[in-house]
Length: 79
Image 1 (cartoon, rainbow, N blue to C red):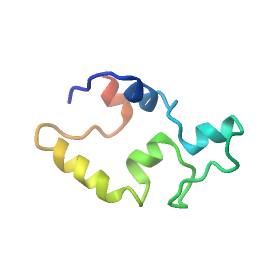
Image 2 (image 1 turned 90 degrees about the vertical axis):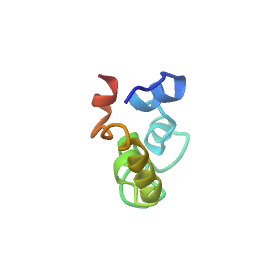
Image 3 (image 1 turned 60 degrees about the horizontal axis):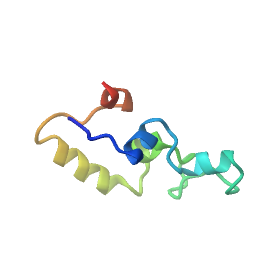
Image 4 (image 1 turned 135 degrees about the horizontal axis):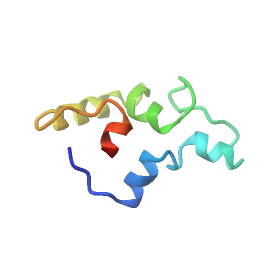
């Protein structure tokens, strides 16, 4: 899978996206928890584990699996 680099992709892959963990670190919000209430909201948690985003994740996997397998982790996207 080839990705066109953009500021949003770069921020996501380097964990500088405005997730709750990121905002909490700078004391912008009070809690780093995800809106699904299953752990802290990190980039990996949103991409791979958030229960609320399950349907979107399934659509993404179905779309990307037409050409190639969805990378298991962000490191594979960087390669």
